[in-house]
Length: 145
Length: 253
Image 1: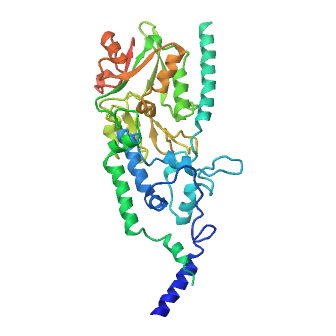
Image 2 (image 1 turned 60 degrees about the vertical axis):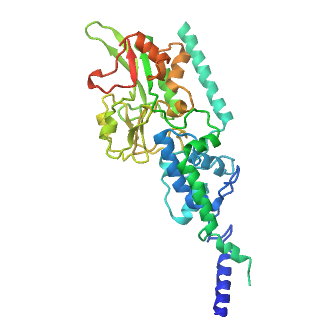
């Protein structure tokens, strides 16, 4: 029995030792920015789909905007940047969601409708607004003539 | 013997009892009490949910809507990330300009038409999956998670307010307006702005042009600008005969 146990330990030891980054037996999960999840990564790995579905219904059907699990926020912190420093989309195998989903061979439907890249930064949004006001000013000038 | 390796072997395994209890507790805070999370997250709104005591509506003054202005249409397109239609037969149109001429008198009017956010929406009646629904505050939306793209709602809508997405859209969507091939979409009354206490993009653009043809507000609040205007001046709903009681009303039509 002891021998069997020892053998088992060795086998599990050997099998699990490379279950770390850079191994084929464990997905290479990209690092995120922002604060870590208080519930722990394990909890989110296991439950993210349930939490996302639950809270999406709250937001869309009930109009509750103060939710805990939103795809937008996932993507904000978990975005993976490419060589040019641009966030990669889900068509890139380096995308955060694909890292695990490719590994587990589970298809994600989210990005058939949702954007897989993070929202423009608030500064970019401000910049984007500027041409609008110019456009409007030009329109107003035209209308006044 | 590789003892530390045992720690790694725990990684892909199931959670232990303590983890499980902790996760259960975390779930409970999310599921049971949205009110509590509201406080914890410091929400600005009085209520976290769509308020059944409100009914959002629009009043469009046709006399003030200029024929050559389409500021509201471009504002909507920019806000919600749909392209201005090249082929009006198939391309998305959340809001569109309509020019009308009275054959008897020759009077020409120009107006905008979009989802009329009916009190009795036919699109909701016919939807076989429950994807088409009306929020408690009267905003009619499509739940694209369960929309199967059958387009019954498009046929049922007397205002031709809905569009079907025929082609793939990849990473062009706004985070507040997800759009995908095979689903139906329409004006959301800029629900993301309304929930944040704002006004729809079209109304904002219309006011910015100085035409001021659109008023947005709560139809159930007698003190709101829109209710006061409705009480003072005559207005009409499009296809009033259908008895759908739309949230969008027109003046001087």
